[in-house]
Amino acid sequence: MNMIALAAGGLLAAGGAYLAFVQKKKTEGMLTELKFMKATPLQELHGTWKSLCDEGMGDGFRDFIETNGAAATDGELVAPYSGMPCAYYEATVLREYEKQETSTDKDGKVTTNRTRGSETVSSQKSSSPLYVSDGDVRVGIDLDGAALHLKDGADRFEPYESSKTYTFFGVRFSAPSGIRTLGFKYREKLIPLGHPLYVAGEARQSAGSLRIGRPSEKGKPFIVSVKSEEEVTAGVESKAKTQFYIGIALVVIGLAVALFVK
Image 1 (cartoon, rainbow, N blue to C red):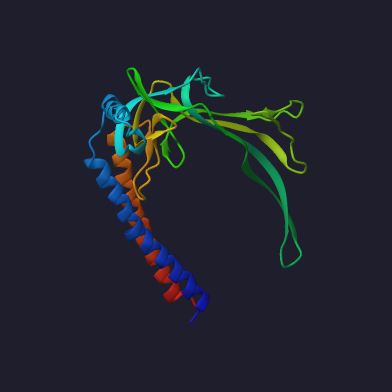
Image 2 (cartoon, rainbow, N blue to C red):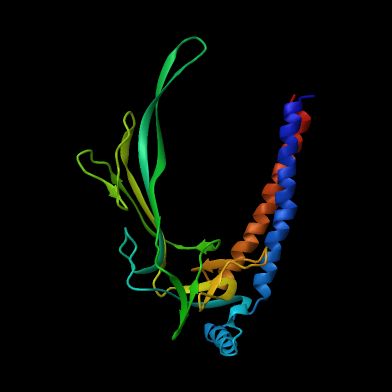
């Protein structure tokens, strides 16, 4: 019996069982919670909090809610590559490169191959505050720990010019020696300014204002999405099914490795 194959197969099967049953159950629990929650209008949420504040109990306000509104921020924010007005963005620069790799086989024959790859050389997230707004009410969102669903922004490739100086978000790029830089991919993901937002999280008072953030109760979802509630729940449902099928496949593969690899 191959002990290495037995151990590897056991790990695969155990991981698959966890994914197919434990993780899938957690995802289904989140799905049930989202499906049966009733969206709270921002005006109503803000009114409830304000009433508690008037009674001196605002500090203790905590409520797990889902709500809808429009994306807003302070000042004027534009995505760095597309120039699109937005309330939040994530921007990345990838370096596409080509390099030579030399290998020697058991007979001493030397082979040289060219391989291509990519690496992230710079990334940035907007630091402006994000709000979900409705009329004259806007509520800040603390994004730490959020499952973010963003829209695609710019996605373009520019060939590298050795005579040109490249600076990404204030940091100068220096091409590494021995590796040919082919060019750069510029990618954005963003929340357009004024775009409808679906938010599920914990509403609470923070620094004297009403905000939405990661729930204090473990297992509760925290979602900030440019998709509708229906699209979000459909995605969570699809995720649960995928976890089950991949988990079962891993169990089968793990058992096969453990039993049949000699």
